[in-house]
Image (cartoon, rainbow, N blue to C red; front, side, top):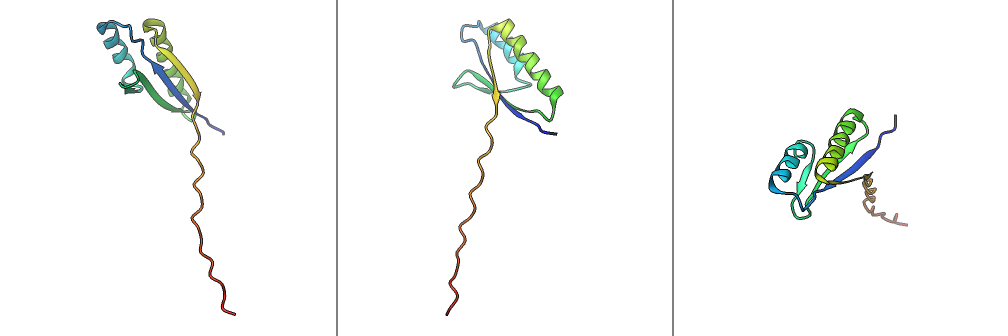
Length: 94
């Protein structure tokens, strides 16, 4: 079965009052990582666990409804192929 990985970000509404922001934190912290420099929550989700993906997305869209959080979901970038190590070839003595 093919699976997929999603990169999910949720940009916090910077106009939230402290109490609203704290409630948003309580809602999202168990599911995502906080990047304070960008006011952004982030998580990478695997399609191998569809119940978890569904739970996280449902919670995020609830945060969007309640707190104006902007949610973005896109395919996660794939890991670049590792280049092969150079191999030295010795010439056979003639």
